[in-house]
Amino acid sequence: MPACPLLFRHEGVKMEINLDAGRLAVFIGGFLLFLLLETLRPARPWRGERGARLAFNVGVAALNTVLVRVFIYVPMLLWTVHVEEQGWGISRWLGLYGWTEIIVSLVVLDFFDYLWHRGNHRWRFLWRFHKGHHADTGMDVGTALRFHPGELFLSGGAKALWVLVWGPTPVAWFLFELLVSLCSQFHHSNIDFPDPVERWLSRFIVTPRFHAAHHAVERRFGDANFSTILSCWDPLFRSYADPGSRSAPAWAGMGLGLPQERGKAFSIRAWLEEPLRSRNLDLGVAGAREDPAQR
Ligand SMILES: [Zn+2]
Ligand SMILES: [Zn+2]
Image (cartoon, rainbow, N blue to C red; front, side, top):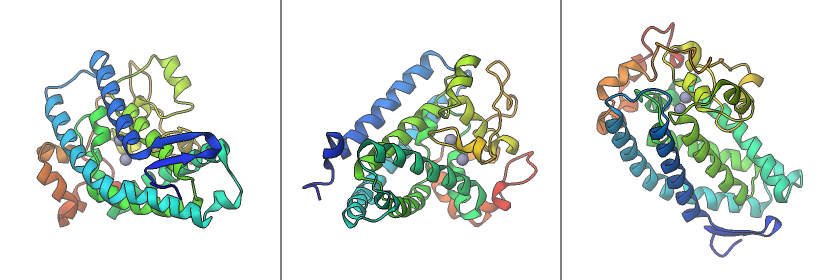
């Protein structure tokens, strides 16, 4: 076991990193980079509420950063180290090591993340909390911060199970968390690419246009495009919706975000309490055939 799990040395790939400070630096650096890009070249025109949405989402992030670090991120690193020491997990049984282990682990963990996201839209209890993310009335880099603490705790439990089943090394886990954070900031940001670039890029990774279809209020799109890093999972498991072209997005005119949530879009208290309210389950999507959580 390393002297301190937050300062980890990985001999196989010559890596010595402070896992705690490194994650925060990448998180803040990525956020500022995509904030700058979407300010310079926004794909959708900004509406008047941009500042209020950003303030709300940064407030949520500040709360989550404290909670997640103490209750999820550090315990998860300790758990990953413990699982590795015990030799648990499929990756250990397969004898994977070095960069091979890291790359295979990233793909496998990304697949688990796809299944988990799909489950969040499928199961009522999970949807209660995940709905807080979809309540955003627009989509930009700030939306990547908007996750209910309840969802983060639930996904923390799910991730502990993934680590036990797969057995990634702490470095692979750390890189996975970094990539999820960066890719989430990227595909939520209000930027877009010319159609040929978009078509090429979205064959490999989730792009902002690909993910915007997931935030469209029309369920035909909202029940699709669940991938986080690699975009292959949706076509492979028949949950892909073509987001359309740059000049004519397929969801144009429908808007983004759950319309019923707009009244309390900028009230942290109402937003935090929402999943705990009994009437929560009545809140579906206006004009939709059905609420995904009702199925
Ligand atoms: Zn979702
Ligand atoms: Zn999203």
